[in-house]
Length: 236
Image (cartoon, rainbow, N blue to C red):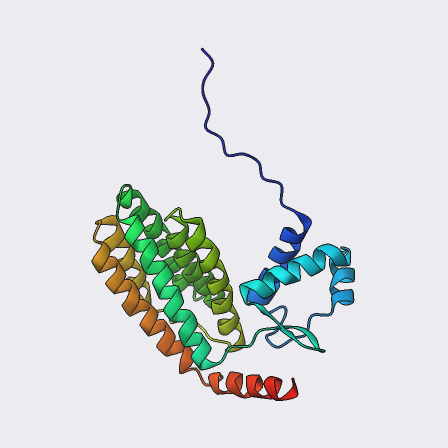
């Protein structure tokens, strides 16, 4: 009797999806700065694509909230005020709390172990003092937490929120605290998931997000974000 396999179907990504993914990455990592206008002709030439799929990709990012259309001016990458950063973190916390609730069901031990492996990556980055690697490991922890929930809806929403988070970090030239305390906050969340304690996991997650938001909005450059956003609205 031939063996039975359980394989995921191969999904071919459309051209607009590929373009949208590339643009998301560029926005998240600061290659396209907040407030920048996206020139259709220039982008099409740089990416080597026609304007049709490029327009579709840009429309997707507009629907996701990463681009904003200003009448008679064009498409611009969003800029975020302190108030908008706080709103984003409120939504992030809600999405990640929902993921925690789902993780403490069946398979919570394995999920907790997976998250602890991400904590180990943070520890390795801290040992070397690599701030960029520390930031990437932190983001990976939260992305993995939501991915483990298995909810496509949560992952879809969370992806945009994490792009906005990366944008904020890039604009503010913000470095994560490479400290034992910061790492222990993540370890605490992972251990609560592994132990199947949903309320504790959500409580620790909420405390961690509050601490991260306090750092982000107290950064010296945050005032300049508000001023740039004000000037952009005035020009529009």
